[in-house]
Image 1 (cartoon, rainbow, N blue to C red):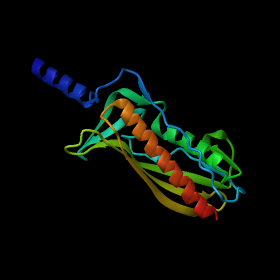
Image 2 (cartoon, helix red, strand yellow):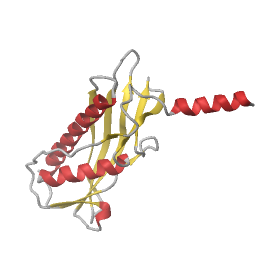
Image 3 (cartoon, helix red, strand yellow):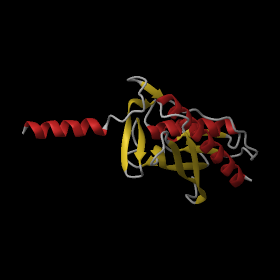
Image 4 (cartoon, one colour):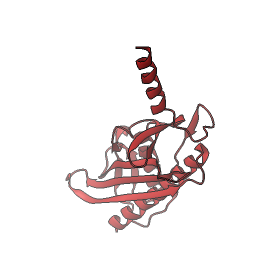
Length: 197
């Protein structure tokens, strides 16, 4: 019986202990909005909904995938907020300063808008390929722009971004996440600008 308990304990520890030379017990991963100025006419207001995502990404923990088979999380590191809320906040700020819309607010602000932006996070993790020492950060989001009053879709598209970390350390992985997310936000502004023309 003791052997069974010991085996269970080791299994639980192994599931949460992956770390690339961990730098501390409270390493915080942050994301930032980007400054991208759009050229569309700022005539409509926009409401940004919190993204939907799979359960393994709906967390404050930093997800990783090994060989496309096993999900895990980095020990000693976390997002500064739950990932969907962090993405929503940054997309809102990026679109607010882009100039593409008259006003931009989140869905929990109590405000209404002419258009609604819905996103689904399909990938937001570090992936370790066989033989690679440092992970590749992969971000993929499905985006829908919807008319609030008519409830009809105005546009739908997918944005993808990848960035290989320079080393298998938490600071390098954080930098790669930040760079990939910046690229994804730039794509979002560019695609919405095309739809606004």
